[in-house]
Amino acid sequence: MRLSSSSEEKRNKRERYSIRKTMDGSSATSSLLIGYEGVPKSDNENMDYFLDQDEENPQYHNLQQHTISWRSSAVVEELKQLYSIALPMIITGLLFYGKAVISMLFMGRLGKDVLAGGSLSIGFANITGYSVLSGLAMGMEAISSQAYGAKQWLIMGHALQCTIFILISASVPISFLWLNVEPILVYCGQDPSISSIAATYLAFCLPDLLFQSFINPLKIYLRSQNITQPLMYSAAFALALHAPINYFLVYYLELGLRGISIATVITDLNLLTSLLLYLYFTGIHKRSWQGWSLECFREFKPILSLAIPSCISVCLEWWWYELMIIFSGLLGDAAEAVASMGILIQTTSLVYIFPSALSLAVSTRVGNELGANRPDRARASSHVALACAVLTGLIAMSFTTTLRNAWGRAFTTDEAILSLTAMAMPVVGLCELGNCPQTTGCGVLRGSARPSLGANINLGSFYGVGMPIAVIMSFVLDMGFLGLWFGLLAAQATCALVMLFMLLGTDWGLEAKRARELTRANNSAVQNEEP
Picture 1 (spheres, one colour):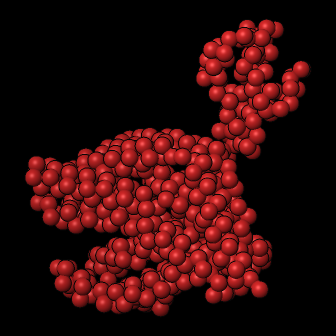
Picture 2 (cartoon, one colour; picture 1 turned 90 degrees about the vertical axis):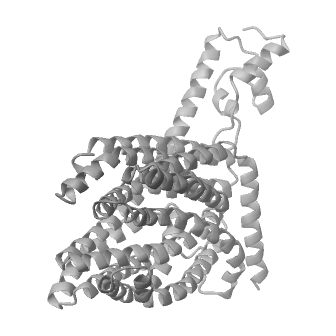
Picture 3 (cartoon, helix red, strand yellow; picture 1 turned 180 degrees about the vertical axis):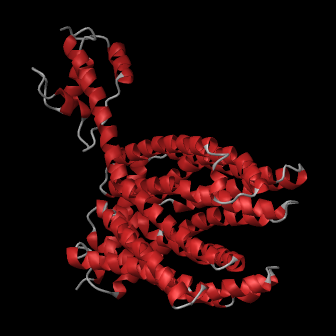
């Protein structure tokens, strides 16, 4: 063994073999060099020892192999952590998708007018109600996950209470809007009979706003603690009863569309009841829940400051797809274009389940690690998740391209609609190649309490880039239906590139400091209220 006398050689080695901290914050060289004879035990001495080794020494190469092995095991461990959250969320998403499909099947059996009115009401409910509640609930995501990582249990309980109050408050104006939806739809040019059917469906769906005001925060509350399987089992239980309840209400009680609406409400009530029973019998809430209290309003300002941009970010993306349907209705072959657009949006909704679950998982992981003051782990989690998102996008693109000629036949036999669908499916696949990293990136931003950045990126990408391109290509360049999807492709590509640029430039040490300040500020507020 020879010692290097050249500081330049040491510096070159330091650059070639950068020594990163281990996942628990200790020195990588410390953990890797333990067991090597004659190795000093202090971190500085370990670094000098590592740099002084001869590259031809077998012991030196063993050390390199241990370093590579450590990095590989860290990636594998992070993959396990991510997908222990993501896989149950994927199954849950598929179950929710099945619930929507069952409702649509029962609508279709009641006639084309009921199907049209029901579809219109569901679209209106998504735009004005469910997207708003889902987006507002995400305001608690960063606070709850970071508080869990920092072991600030009371903050989690207060964030849950405050978010429920915010969602119930938001449900009040949404309810008034739904009760007056018929004249609004007629004013917008919709058929009066179809508008009446849509108004009936929404009126009987009003209780669902209250149930969703509890379900959305509870899902985030559990996921922040890496608890996802109870939600999956609860969703499976609710879905198992959904079809029988529909059949009983629609045919036995002869309630028609009203029965389908009521069945949707009962299914969500079953889901909520299952989650509450899980909390009650496991007692997992006892650390963070000390009963309803006005102290939760101490969290109101920080949660609302995160909830509003989160809501805007979610709504901007949801609304884009509804605008795609409206633009389709302005094309020359409007009937076929709208029908094909509906099929393709159902396709993207199915595919979206997978990057969405990954987004929820990485948001939890990043929030937990920043709250625990482990910025290296948060960075590693974001990088691994983004790599998985790119792979997911490639799989989605292969799926849509391979099945472009067969997929539409599951929905219709009309040749004109099938032709439009097959033509657009490869472009849909390219959109998913950008959508998967973009969706995952939004999860990283939520977990690090930066939803405003995500909202600004979505606004600029979808409405500053995508929409003008869609309008120009469809109506000015006469590309028609395909031009709308090229506009979405431009939006997704822009969003993904900007998102990746911002995430790769993130100062994770600074984000960990912000997380400490966020949880410390909320914890101080809680302690000031205690007697």
